[in-house]
Image 1 (cartoon, one colour):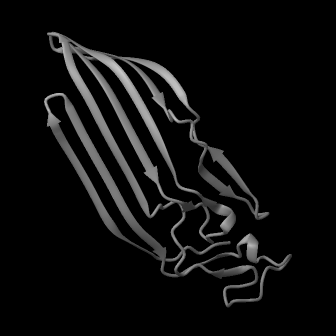
Image 2 (cartoon, rainbow, N blue to C red; image 1 turned 135 degrees about the vertical axis):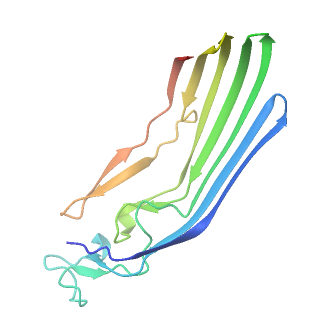
Image 3 (cartoon, one colour; image 1 turned 180 degrees about the vertical axis):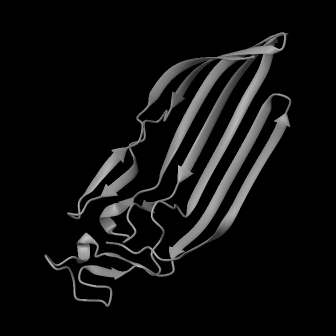
Length: 185
């Protein structure tokens, strides 16, 4: 049984967008978040657990300990994203584009007790796309080829703890290639 208690979250966000020239758009966003628990209790982390009955009574009950000062689970301290799109018109109603986006996230804990076994390392993901946008009156077609996680980074995006102090992980999407056709009306 856990008692999450109160949380303090503070940080900074930055978002920039620029049209470097008539062919190139750039973007950058970053966030720094310091989110910690002010009080509360949680089961003893596995690395501190000393068998049935948990650790010594810490005033929170057998097997529980304070989470005051722990980082909020699932909250990275730093996340950033940079993108660029190069586009030009090979014909009057046709625009060709090439785009990239690189997103980075720092490590997080998946559990409120900040167990070292619930620590998920930070990672970066590169997405790429190229395509054609075609204007037809007030309607627009967009045909694209894309690669998500182009560098095939292996990572976990979620871990779930169990009552037996075990964790089950959800792996992030591997490199995925595809094509899309979009019609705006």
